[in-house]
Amino acid sequence: MAINQTISKSKFLVTALLLLLSFVALHSCSSIQEKNVLTNNNHIKPNNSLITIQGRVTVQGTDSVPLGLTSVNIANKWVWKDEELKAYGENKRVFVNKKGYYSIQIQKGDTLIFIPNHVIYGRGSAQYTFTNISESQTLNVEIKYNKEAYLKQIKDNPVLEMNLNRHIKQVNPEKLISVSGTIYSKKSNKPLKNVDVGSAFNNSTHGTGTFHLTNNKGEFHLNVPQGNMCSIIALSPNAINFYPQNDTIINLYL
Image (cartoon, rainbow, N blue to C red; front, top):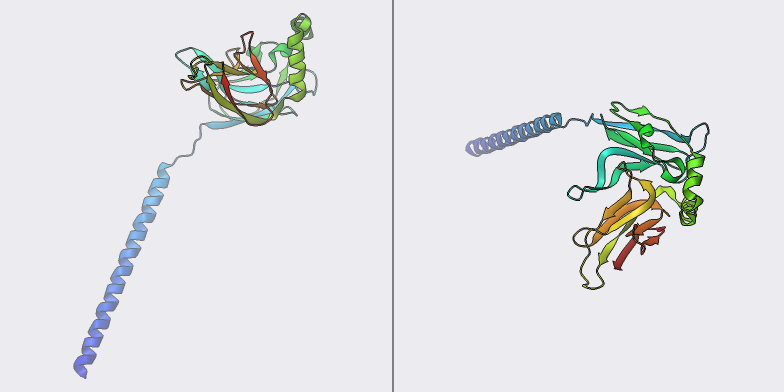
């Protein structure tokens, strides 16, 4: 009986010792993992180079918002470009909303260029250019209206006037929609590369209208303000114009 009790006590002590060692081992592993997590987190540094610029855009001397679209563009940063062709189609940008307000995140040192409707307010974007912005701030901008220049442009161009009036009435800067698709050759049924697809009455910082070119598969994709006039082969007499209201896919043979 004494021998059995001694064996039982020994087994109990061994079992207890094993449980204690297991606990110590688990606790050590947990501590090491926690230290590793803390160490890894120390390597994750916040992005302090991003700043926020916000404000309101109005017509000079009034509380009115510029007609049509006004974009706030980051100079030399692009949503679409082709370096080989020297084609720069669309800046990284936001649009001023219907009440004139905007907000955009940029890198410290970036340049912002405000671009209103060029037909109504001209192409003088230099006066709305702000360089070497180093900190978050409120930046309000006043756009000059040159009535004489505007009337001169539309005087002998009724198509321009008609398209501009339609644009002003129906474009919605507060909702971006997707316009995408594929363009093929009628003759060969093969995809067409470098066909221009653009949106009217909003320019890039290079002074041209916003556009993308189809890739080697004939594909294109733009995000445009709802109701904005879009064009395929815009500079051609056979330009195809449309006014998308919702996300749109176009497969076209030219």
